[in-house]
Image (cartoon, rainbow over all chains, first blue to last red; front, side):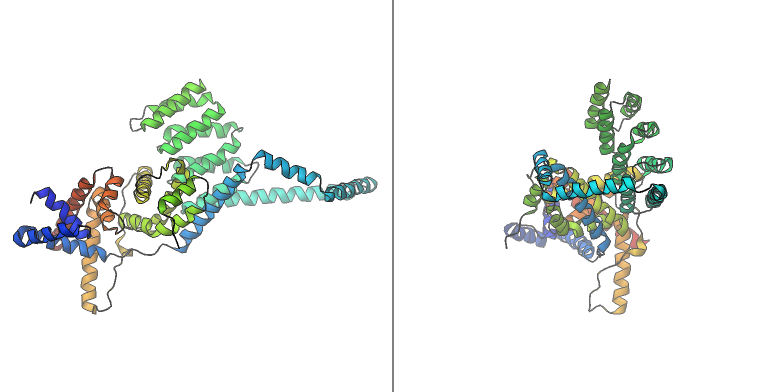
Length: 267
Length: 183
């Protein structure tokens, strides 16, 4: 039997996928060829031992995080697919409800009442409310910074999701998000950081931070996402960074084309 | 009850029925976890990488054509996730031998168990000494559900070449084990 044919059939034999007729011929061959039989025994021993190597069960945490993430995606996708006609119907439905009439009436009474009451306490109320909003923001920012430092990618993703809930973020959070974009080992976390940072592109330091991170990115998905973002923003300042990226030899050819097109479109 | 095939489920995910990814996850999470665990020996990292595979499957669902084997497509995605991980961390998987275990057989006595444990630890070490590509082909070959034609699809070679690669990897593993036994 030819060496390569023997090697292929030996693997099929060990895996148990050799067809019955071929198996018979193979076994007959083994009986006649002592070297081949010895090889089967030796390799067969290692093959069987591999069965004994145990793999632990993944933790329930993995399931929890997967389904959490899937739920978020499903919600996102459902929101995006609600058509404008459905939205219009829903709004019209609300307008013609009798509850609306009552609500307007009560609101009118409230306004009138408010007009006649002196405004002494209202100032104090506003202050308290402002303090509360600011407290919540600070707490959330602290939470974001803590979560972004965690070793689990899922917790860092959660941190970014928390950051996206803050309307006006401070420099510290921006810097933490940019640091994540530049250094996080997990590609999904980096992607989420871009998505979150894209909410604050009106802030020049965010734009600059994203542009500066372009040449450091090695993952094709990140490179393409950044190209799409810069294209959407028509950011001419990104051209130099993209050119630096194009100089990299290991750059994926599809990404290369994408970046060249992006540069051409921005110009 | 008729069960939807993996291909049919993934096509449903592609058409927007994202819920079905949960079923695919339940079917394949252990297989994927086993792949990453056998490659890295690190359970926490393996869990993270399994998540990344499904995130990527969701993200690139539009590229799924439904042709060919779903298993091969999924493991190709898993390889890309592994590749990205290496690229980002600029290091290959390192073995943490302390966490490894083996499957006990009830009728083993204590001495036989110790011996078996030693042998299997040796085998683990030998497996980690194999080049990553060879380790990968061994891990795929040991998956009962995966045919050599599918392994070829994942590795980007013919079915015959996959068998030859598996044979060479197994031979190399045996050589390393023997060398370690002598040393």
